Length: 163
Image (cartoon, rainbow, N blue to C red; front, side, top):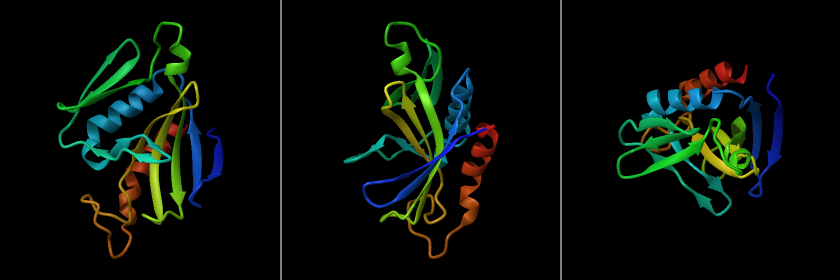
């Protein structure tokens, strides 16, 4: 059963997190499906105070696993995420230790944001995945009316990976 926490952010927004299990290959499977099948609809990068990396794939990334690390290679750039068992003295600090689907409300840029966030064993944010937003189209243009069908991917992933 997923645990739910609510956090009030510095800018006044409220974020509700629904944690999911990170054991075994669950996060690896989730990310391979997400990056492999939904790459064109998501935005990725760390979102921390003072820095928002909102990266969109322009083509399907090449995905590979080596020593517990998932690599998403977009050609001109790539990133590595420790999502599986790895070796060495820092293994526990590097691997995903917490994962949560989230919804943020009350933002200045968007009334709501839907995503997935990963943290390492030190509690540092590794990655935020932003799912299609009901308030914006795929080109980031504000819609005149929300399109709630745009939350379908987030809802589907949450339903399947929370249990």
